[in-house]
Length: 226
Image (tube, rainbow, N blue to C red; front, side, top):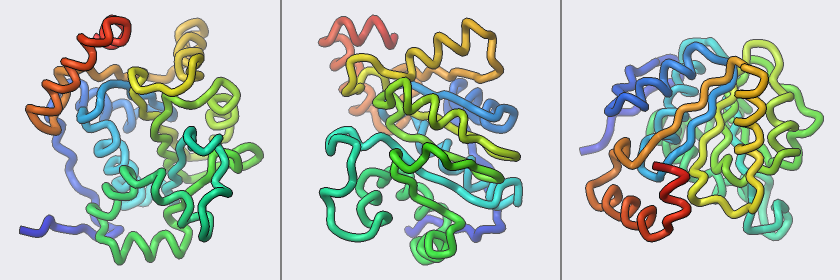
């Protein structure tokens, strides 16, 4: 059975399956910047992208912007052929998949063409300013400190920024997200940090078992995340 698709003017009710998912939704509704970290399969990207789509559908923002660090190509997109959007699509596939499921592929493509949905290479963020925009930042555990500063200070009027990542899968030795969290706590900034755990995994029983097994196997990672 095909899943129901919604138009750009239809907001949907996102039903949280765990307490942390509910906390994440509330944080997105009530905060300008939100950080969500935790294992794969906890619904971070699904909830974040659908919440951004709801903001767009309700007319609370005019644009959805997608970005993420491109760690395996040295943060450069020049290696891949095609337009900027074509280069970015493989990296942003999880968020794009949710938005295509939400709106339908045809309407997603229409919004992309019209600039209602925008795909941003991380290196072009500096110097930009986002107004009336919901910015989704996936794989945020691989951002460095300078990138965190560049992103978080780009927010203009009536915008939100959602960082999503899994510190257990970081590919950088000094993740900027950790430093960002320290700054938030030190200066008591109004930026909620939602920490998902293996108990929030909703993808499948096997995924939950695998994540627990990997975290236990890697004792350092396990102690950091559980």
